[in-house]
Length: 253
Image (tube, rainbow, N blue to C red; front, top):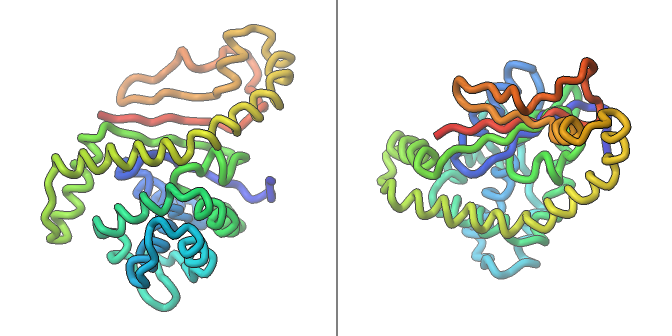
């Protein structure tokens, strides 16, 4: 599915900071930016405004197919209306999580997300970015944090907007959303992994020849924690592996 346009895919759970990182990277590179989560939030926002229920899959799909969205200078627009703050309310966030759990909506938004891939490049953030939406992305980053750290970030954001919140409630909500997200993506992610393994295992075996090195090259995954480089994750072969994109996992407490 490669179009020749480079993609950096940043995945991770809600409130992990992936949006902040993605916007900064896109600005530094001068690339386009996609906040896939905003698409689900927009569907939820329109559903709330029009009275479409969360169980009405056909109605939600119709809304997703008609979205007129653009990202501009850090703002989100629905048609001519700026909805940057409107889609960040807790009600809309909860609705977006429900919407993202509807397989038909995810399918309807897939082509919309891929349409953001334009020269000179794209930084795309959100769930499924590297596994389903842009599986051929040149760099895949998974940014995560503990529920407590993520709740703290969300709490600070809400306080700055003058919106009352509770850390305990935010932690419970984030854990519930994580569970819904895992259920929604597990089957697709497992199928993608099986296909990738079947396609590339022969190439890995020929390139590396050793089980340990083959595993390291297959993953090309670096577990990065503050002050602790994961040197043991790097294959020590003299030539770099070209069998797949680089993948990075960043976690913090």
